[in-house]
Length: 423
Image (cartoon, rainbow, N blue to C red):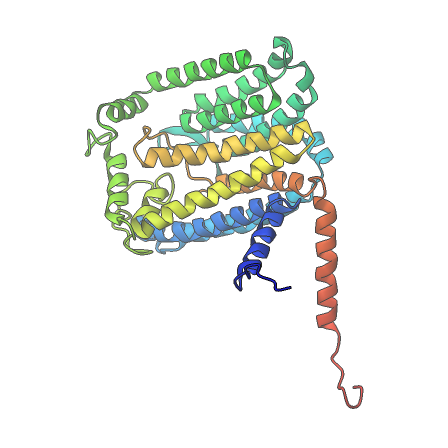
């Protein structure tokens, strides 16, 4: 009998194996861990490169005498933050639960420090910073980590009772109101908005009924509106944005938005090249901070901006996998809060740069300059990595991988013998 079945072209079977291997990797228990840590490291390294590029002129011209001064500080915070993330990734959930109440208490105390004379300092119209010796930080950044962890513990323990108003109200509303109130009193509406998004993300993951979720959303929107109306500066920026898409007053309230859009436009498709930005020459305020995305677009063009969005999307997929795969309600809520915090802040920052929202002053997570923000973001992701390490099957898979690595290293470390004389 003659076999007349069509022969498969060379390479097709191999392609099938590659596709199967990719699918197997995506469904592996350790994929969440590698997606999160890989995208986090990639964003941090890319952020260091762009901070160096966007801050070099301002650092030198600002009287600091070195084009590397801002970059050097950011690199130190990045190194410390990565170590902190790795340490946090090995802390078990039981320890995080025990620490949650102490951390939220410290967060409230720390948020009082900007109001202490001689400690609190004003920056860009916000009294949200503290200065002790040579150390400058924004306490609200640490408050994000404390709040998301505390919400996970409290809502996770009460999730079967959250259909009743009193179990949602006590103790969540008083604690959130105190922390959020102190942030808004300091004048930092941008950080306050991120706190609101974080709280809503945690409530949604906890399964709070939509009617309560809606009431919380309306209440937070009213607070944000009141903060907007109470500040002439914020009101002017919102009015400029509404009247002309952020460019109605290019030499006044819309100056920053206008130059951000000019940076993106001048970059074109391929960009001007790394380090070749024109707007960073004292034209675009906060080029290495809130508007670093504009510099990315100007220097690296569309591939740079889209590539950055893809890495953020990979981070989002990793976080969503942890939420979906974990059986622990506390883990779901904490990871959802971190997801809402980091991805929500990234979307808000990019929307501001694109002129889709008025300027609110929020940095791009892991990319913008800012030591305290980078440290706490890496810590928050380290907590989620500790959850990803304990996904069903992940711990065993990592143990097997570590044994293989140790075995390979042991083989490499063996002294080689000569085949003739045995030496």
